[in-house]
Length: 296
Image 1 (cartoon, rainbow, N blue to C red):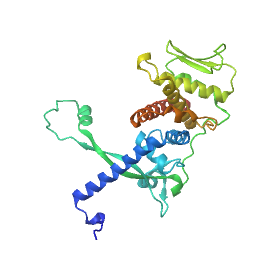
Image 2 (cartoon, rainbow, N blue to C red):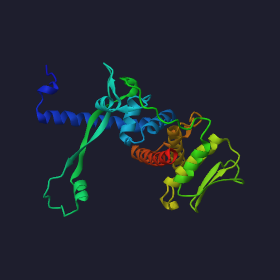
Image 3 (cartoon, rainbow, N blue to C red):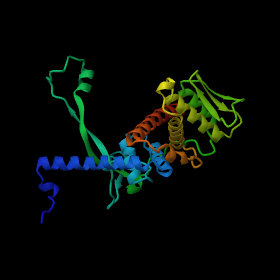
Image 4 (cartoon, rainbow, N blue to C red):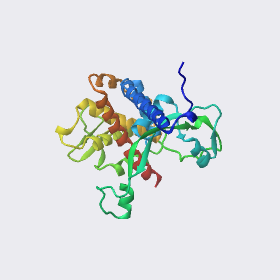
């Protein structure tokens, strides 16, 4: 009977093939994950992961959400020791993520042309594939306490003025709270050049509406012919607002994504993936910019 070789008994080529197989298996799981998030519960779960790990790629936020949706802060085995004075507890299993493999291009390639040092250094590095790496959640470690993160806005929006100020600061359009919006309209983004929010709403609803319209302005500021259909635009904007709200510490429990499943009917995996990539990139951009403003 044929038995599998141990890693130490493999040749260099066999080890490379095994690593590629593990990376492909992770990519296959991501494909399954794209299909699974079409349910409203799984979509919200992915957005929660995105809010916590917005610096991670779309692929890796999906892998983390699929393996440990309750994760709150992850780092590699070595990083926990080196950067945080913590160590992974015995018996814990890592969360698989995809790690890019970047190599330096060989000097003297025919297509290379003279560049300055910075350009040359950037050009000499190229992505050749991915390998599987492992990270661990803080709950899987013990040791020194983590540095305390500055208190963020809470569910009752104690920093309401600061948050609204940050939204205005990062928006490419004026954000105004106004009377006289059409019935059932809490806010709107006009490509004519403004964002309007209904006056008189509770602070939490005002912030969430402002983030929703801000997301529209980031994602849908183009000609009508280039825009996705209205249902997709609403899914994208609401999803970005949800992720940014969660990252700011706002209570997102009253968000509903019941319409995601119906919107996804007839959509291909690639269409859904493109939507997820747009949501991830827009949420990261807004969170990063608001963090800078709120920290000032």
